[in-house]
Length: 231
Image (cartoon, rainbow, N blue to C red; front, side):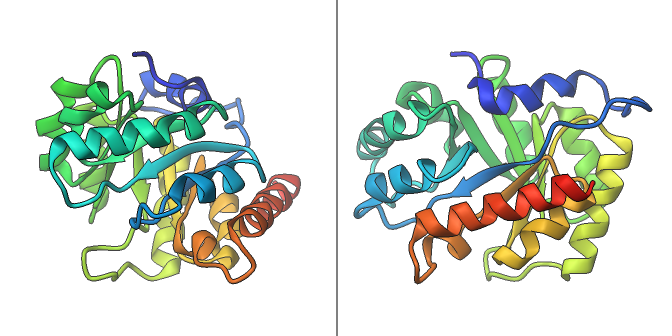
């Protein structure tokens, strides 16, 4: 299954490791990190996907057996893919093709290296959990289709916002491979886009919003538009 075209539009940039001098990157897009609790998830995603342009959705699978996980993905996939977004699994590269997902999101270099042969060339391989610049470059060399900066670790910790923005700006200046910047709040969306992120990941700040996921996604999209206008 070829990569879904919305995120593949950025992935098409990945053939070279050095950024050309002239062309601007495409306008940044949103990347949704879905909540873990599957109850009512399809409805939440449908509302969020209907509120703005979404490039991809990261699906975290329930703690169950592989058959149930595959069925869960298959139940969610039409909601995401019929809106033109790529559906990525959080880990579980061995299930991606079987479940009809567009790829997997791996945490750390070792996980990426273990999964790359399973996913490529047909499916997307993203990489997060990159603690250093060297790790990010190794991920690119290994074949990652994107790198993510600012994602929380297992305990919920993350670098300072200033450090994340600096990492994004460095990457955008040097490399063609897209980067996803994780926004812990809607207030981080605009500055991360201005720093050069190709995608802005939003999760709890959207799905945990008191005024609903659709309104929060629309707000995030508005902030992206402001950053693009100011660029």
